[in-house]
Amino acid sequence: MSRPTISEVNAFLADLQTFRETGAGPAEYAALMERKAELLQRIAAHTSGDADAAEVARLARERADALKSAH
Image 1 (cartoon, rainbow, N blue to C red):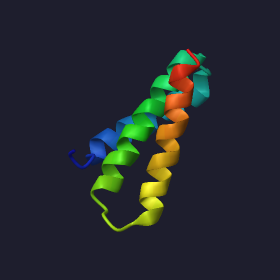
Image 2 (image 1 turned 120 degrees about the horizontal axis):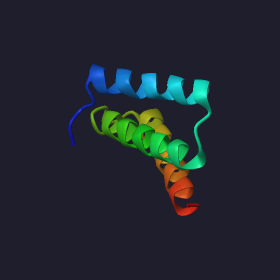
Image 3 (image 1 turned 30 degrees about the horizontal axis):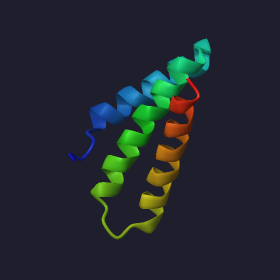
């Protein structure tokens, strides 16, 4: 699993801002939360020993999975 690049994080944040401005639908929100979970999991994988990073990634994954199963 590769470490996220600054460009990937920046693209996610830009898409998050667009979502907040346009209020896209639930499917778009679920896809955005999937990207967030994936980025946080990749960050946690490269910060071994950081229990907080691992917990944040775990919670993001749970939320993304719950949104995915709702659709």
